[in-house]
Image (spheres, rainbow, N blue to C red):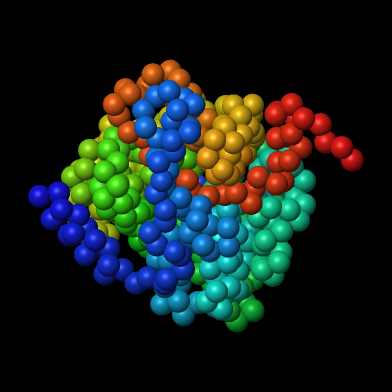
Length: 361
Ligand SMILES: Cc1ncc(COP(=O)(O)O)c(C=O)c1O
C-alpha cells in the first residue's frame, strides 16, 4: 500500500517542470564512528551537501524547480535576498548563471561580521552577481516590511532599465512575488521520497529525520513527503533563527500550499510539525561552543564538514538529544546534511577561539 502512495507522489511531482542541476540521488551513509562515540541509536546521513551545484546544499534541489518557473515567465534577471553569507543567495546566483540569467542579491548585514569577500560572498563576487549590501538588526532574520521597501526600489530600477525581473523569496520557501507555488517544498517532498527509496534498499530503519530549519520549505517538503507516502518517520526541524511559535505556522502554511499544488489532502496540523528552538541560543548566525564542538566531532569521526550557521547547530542538537536519551536505542536517526559549508571560513576566528586554539598572524 505504502508503495502505491509513494509512486503516486512521484508521479505528481514529475508533472512539475525541472531543470537538471544536481547529482541525484545524493549519497546515504551510516555514521558508524559517530554512532559509537555517542552510544545511542544508529545514525545515518543524507548528503545533500553533495548536490554538486557550486558547493552543494538544499537550495540547489529547490532551484531545479524554481529556475524553470523563472524561465517560463520570460525573465532575464533573478532577484532574491537574505543575509550576507547566505547559501541560498549564492546557490541562486549560481543556478541563474548556469541558465544565462542575471542575479541580483540583496544581502542584509544580520551579524557583526565584516562583509568581506569570503565564503559565500566571495563566490557571489566571482559569479559577477549584482550585490547590494544593506544594514540590518544583528542575530535576527530581516523583517518583511524592511525587505519589501528595499526590494521594491530594486524591482523598479530593473524594470525601468528594460529588464524583466523574477523575484523569489528568501530560501525559495514562501510562495509570493513571482513564484506562486511552493516549489522549494515540492523539491523536498521529492527528497523524502528519494531518501525512503534509499533507506529501504539499505535496510536502514529510520524513525527520525533531523535537519536545520530556517525559512521552512525543507521541513514542510519532508513532512509532506512522509505523510503522502504514509510513512511514520518523524521530521524534527532544528530552528537556527526563529522561535517555534513563529516557525510552526510558517511550516504549516507551506505544507498546506504544497498539498494544494500537488492536489493531495493530508490534513497536516501543527501537531505534525516538530520544531525545536532551544538550539538557536545566541541568535541566527551566532556560533557557540556546542556548535563548534559538533563541527569538530563529525569531522574527526566521519570526515564530513558542517557549517556554523545551519548544519553545525542541527548536529549540536542531535548530539545533545542523543545524550539526553530523547531517542530510544532501537530507533534510527537520519541527519539531513543541507550544505552551507562555504560559510565555515568566514567564521575562522570564532571557531579557533571556541575550539581552544590561537590564530597566529
Ligand atoms: C545550509 C542550510 N541548511 C538548512 C537551511 C534551512 O532550509 P529552509 O530555509 O528550507 O528551512 C538553509 C537555509 O538557508 C541552509 O542554507
